View (tube, helix red, strand yellow):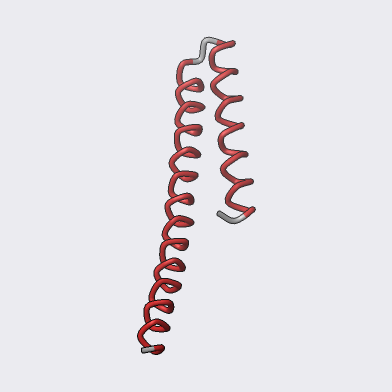
Length: 76
């Protein structure tokens, strides 16, 4: 996950928490729900970024494994 993505997700999450808190303090249920939605959106985006990072790792690991297999066949 890139630094920009991390910062953006953190900002969205914190702004959502602030909206939720403000909504609770003022009794504004719409603002409170909006804040909860913002926080949920940030969590989904973070999860998506982790999946992308994991997929990159898997691809790299597969390439390494294929190279080792090829190397072992070349020795014989």
